[in-house]
Image (cartoon, rainbow, N blue to C red; front, side, top):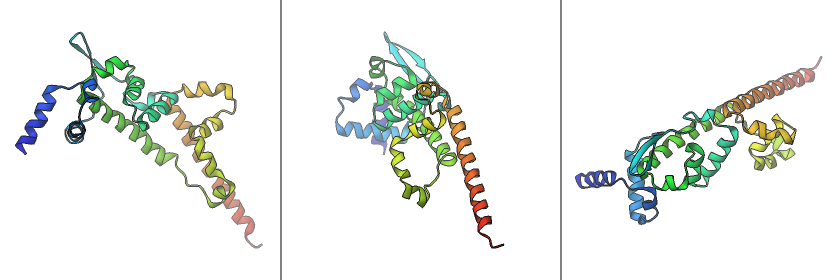
Length: 204
């Protein structure tokens, strides 16, 4: 245990950079992953190095609700593709050279912050926007619409294709509120129609 702790401390003190990570052996990468998982805490602040000096760099938005819808879509795609630099470019506005000079554990601490923010959005969407397809909707072919992902919501909000860019530039908090309202409204309409249908079936 003491030997392992000393190894962790030695690795942390060495402050390896991202360009070095590419040359790490699989064993070294596994060790870094273990340290990140067990010792590194989420931190939104990056340290950018230039001429042996460091500067604290905050994300463009510390609360991901304030990112534009378009930015959230791009962050999610790069995150899913495990494209670390692209994710950090969108969130922090850094260049590839700046990214490669950053400390590995600083980058992974920031990645944990990004992961937590994306999880926050996902949980809210699951709670407020998710709904299971009915057997009738599945029979009608509604599952085929799922491949269009966010475009279904975009098209429902604004049928005019020329105005889609305007919506994509809005903060995601505004978009989410509109989608949540639309879902509640649709649920109310569906429940109302079901009530009317049941009443009409009752014998008189």
